[in-house]
Amino acid sequence: MDLAKFREYCLTKPSATEGTPFGPDTLVFKVGGKIFAIASLDDVPARVNLKCDPDLALELRDRYEQVRPGYHMNKKHWNTIEIEAGIPDVEIRKMIDHSYELVAKRKGSGGSPNRHKRRVRKQAGD
Image (cartoon, rainbow, N blue to C red):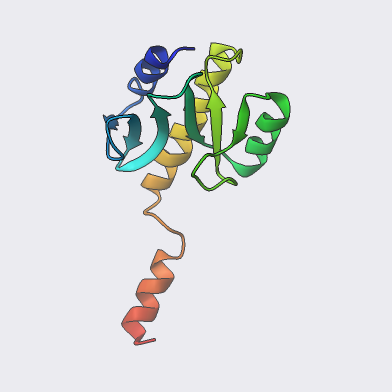
């Protein structure tokens, strides 16, 4: 999958937005204001970062040499993928779908699971 197809597919996701908050050389795809994909425009071969369930992240790294722990990201929850290096497009689309779903689901949950606890403690004066 080339970078143009990656971008096109990310933008098919409901409510997905694209921006360049880290500079003109990095595309960032968000849903509900949260990042689900990052693509470097300078890397050859093209590389992207996608969010991933920690267990699946390890499985994908074992299965594909083109999948590594997320570069400049939380390595437990993000993978860096060389998208033009032999992984079938259908598999990359599954990785994009998974990343999007993780972020979209979390967005709908109201944020951090500890958010309510912090608010209660603050109200109690702790």
